[in-house]
Length: 484
Image 1: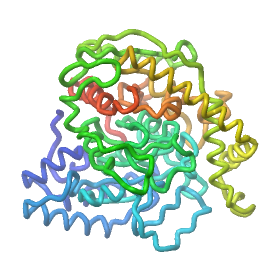
Image 2: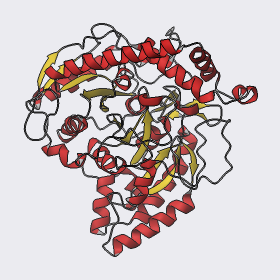
Image 3: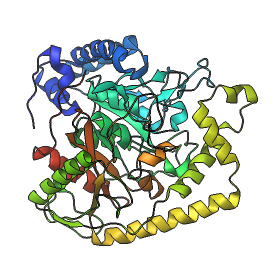
Image 4: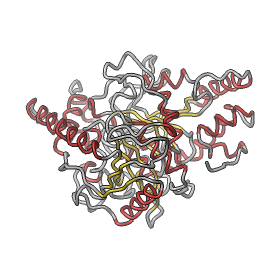
């Protein structure tokens, strides 16, 4: 593990695990760390617009309480005193959840936590603020009529990606080592790739959600962190059971423990930690269906080479699929239409124009169209299930491109109409509900981060995190120049 300074002026460089180790040793306190993060937010917020709300008073009060617990050698939970941000899609007690929309009123009690936020409180995390989202998380970039544009930490003229772009920018810039985002078509992995951090979409149901997403069972919640070990730690917290989500999965063993001692899961076992003995399929273009930028392809190929050096068996192999974008659009657009169904004409006029467009498309979908999309989804899941009978992991680029101009849904001149045109590697795995992660693997000629995606069979979350952790531990994940 790379050493970092423990000087309080550099606490924002540390991972959550390093902060916890420092608290244990008495090198610094949660109050020191929280003050450093709040100071950092003041610096970076004007540059990238990562936050919609920061409650410094509440965060410092939580940090003071945590500091007292650590001094008494009685920390509470796994994240006591660690600063965490929360995407403004999740309910958070005492803080309005406006979801990037001018249609949501800030008034009211706001007296309930989403399941993941409730688990963070139980484990002593310090909640520093709510991060930006496009309106209701509807697209793969982060801008909204309410909150404006969120920008890339490596080049503020570029997009952070989305829809969890605020969380990605915050983590990349040291404004807290942990954040939780949502991912309905890539919304954790897209900004993780564009911003050079680690993002993990667990198996659907592993992290309980409430209220349920208007996009149904496409929507997952997951960690956005500096590395895979921090993501596993955060998963051990936010995957705690909550009766409000009827579709949650049964509690699973610790993912932190599985980083070094888990089994390979689907497709056959490989003992011990790391990737030695794993059978990994490398699909650089989904069978020539995706045009991948050469610099992206080269960086991903190097990451695959490192997996081979670490003992994995690599085979270039493509899953037996065709682009499922039409089925995804039917489900996604129908969800958007259901979301705004109660809205009157005045409220609809307040919506992001692009969101209004997909709402109109969703309103044209019939029940038979929806059920046909469900059938296509089930067939896609069956094909990937068969694929993982032969391969433990699938490796692809996270995205075929790097970050483009901020404030746009698609790259200028691409001819693409919707954000799904440049995310062909991410949304299929929301349809199939498989665990998938984006790991930084390099930068392009403009210094913009590139991500490699690791995917496993449903329920094999530990395997994805274990393989990603092996890349970090081996030094295969490049240490990107500090942004901002």
